[in-house]
Image (tube, rainbow, N blue to C red; front, side):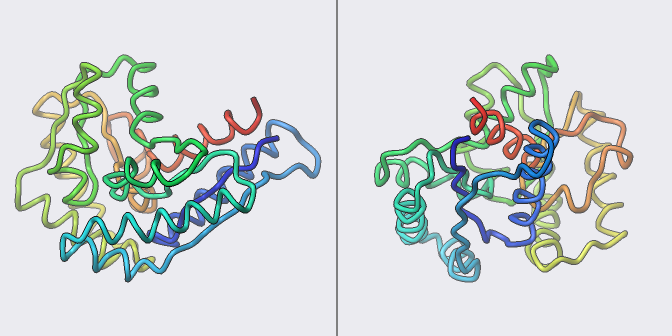
Length: 229
C-alpha cells in the first residue's frame, strides 16, 4: 500500500472527511483491521485565509510548498491538497517536491466524463468560481461550466468562510444553495460540482434533483485507488 500525503487544515472540518472517507474505503476494499497509510500536515488556515484576502498567493504557495516538502520527507508517495481553492498554487508547489500532486479538478473531470456530463454547475469559494485556474481545466475537456450570479457568488463565499469552515450547518444556507442550484439547473446544468471541500457538510444527494459531484469524496476515493495500485 502506498502512503497518502494529506495537505490539510483548509479547513480542518473537511480534512476530517478526507481521513474518514479514505480509511472507510480501505477497510471496505481490504477488510479486517486494514486502514490507510497516511501522513498528514495540517496548516493554520487563518494564515492561508489572510493570504487569500490580501491576494498574496505567492506567500500561500510558499507556506504550502514547505508543508508538502515535509510530507515528502515523511514518506508520502503522492499528495492531495485537501481544498479546491488552493489548487490555484498547485503548480508552484509541484516545482518544490519530487512526488506527484493529485489534482482535485482532474479527479472530478474523470467522474464528469464517466457520467457523460456536458454542462455542469460549479459552486465553491469566489476564487474557485470566478478565476480560471480551476474551471478552465474543466472547460478544456469540453465541458461547459455554469456559475451563479455575482450576488450569489458572494453569499456562497460568506457561507463557506463564516459558517461551514467553523462547523456551522444552517438550514437557511441549505435553502439558499437549493435555490441557486435550481436556477443553474434551469440554465441547463446537468450536474453540480461541490467545488469546495466543506460543501458536502451542507448539501447531500437528497437535497437536490441534480447529480452531485462532491470533490471531497471524489478526491479521497482517487487517493484510495492510487494507494492500492
